[in-house]
Amino acid sequence: TGLHPRLGILTGTVRNALDDLMHAGVLIAVVNCCLAAMGYWRFGSERADFGNLGETFATSLEMLLGNLPQGWSGLPAMQLYILIFVAIVFFLVQNFLLAIIVEAYMTVRGEYVALETEQQFPVDVWNS
Image (cartoon, rainbow, N blue to C red):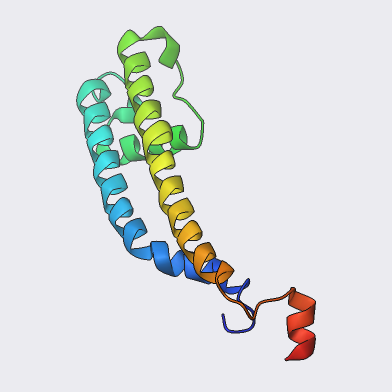
């Protein structure tokens, strides 16, 4: 925004990261489709929560929010699937998104730090 440079950091960060976030969104969609297909293929005939692709996507969303499927600890194959899901989604994808946002923020922040006209917000508003 043009009101104050510090207020523009948020919008500048989003604007700067938008292209990378769009590409990351495509990557995340492909990864989630692959994980859902793997879960449907392996557990579709055994479990109702993986019975079709829609249920598998719903189960994946619940797992993303921290709700693991019932009886997951009794099946070694389900334990491995959840380990793969957590490793990919939480450790890789979330860190990837965080890196995109932090890199965009640092770029925008560096541009605003270089401005010589910026003072504290109340002083800048009062003087304008």
